[in-house]
Image (cartoon, rainbow, N blue to C red; front, side):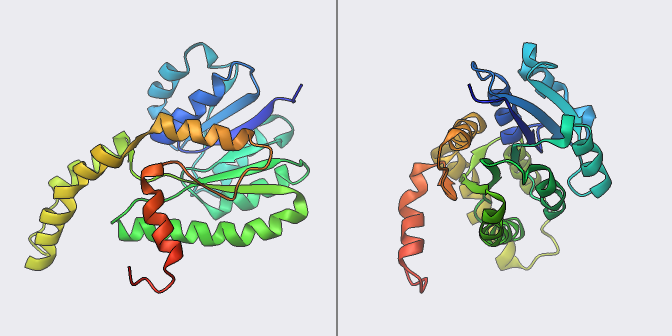
Length: 245
């Protein structure tokens, strides 16, 4: 029987992080011990409710701020033997990777999981391209330590975060923007935002289902797209190196 694997997941107060933590904690074969982390423990109630009877058994909630190196070390040091088999990073941070590599490099089938960005959010999407480049490089170096990295790449995901982004956009003061930019934001971005999520969006639970399958795969791929509706678009991107299509 496979030994229980320790799983550290960041961003578990809502969305994909919460859904993944609960799904893995509810595993019928009890293959995972989940350490579900969040920056602000005052927001733990939804996770506690969703975890139910698994709380304190296959799921523990811990504080972790991915931007605070001391917070990361404190969290990692609180885990028995500092053993982490699977790292689910839903807010990527190079600091946490650097600290955790020393905890997992002695194991043989360990996986990092990092989701992709969303469309039309320039800075946010740029950060996800950076994550992809970081992981492409790290994946080669990680072979030395028998570590496996996988990028979980969802498209639009229907979460509270998505709803808040839309609501904040609707209330945004555009008086300082030039007329053309304001019209593009209102008539293109906001107008199509909800339609895109309604027609192409996934639930956080669906993304969690895909993620667990990759975690359990004997030979997990480096990239895994969770939304087949985007396959034709991504196929065109890789087939057209000049960007003319």
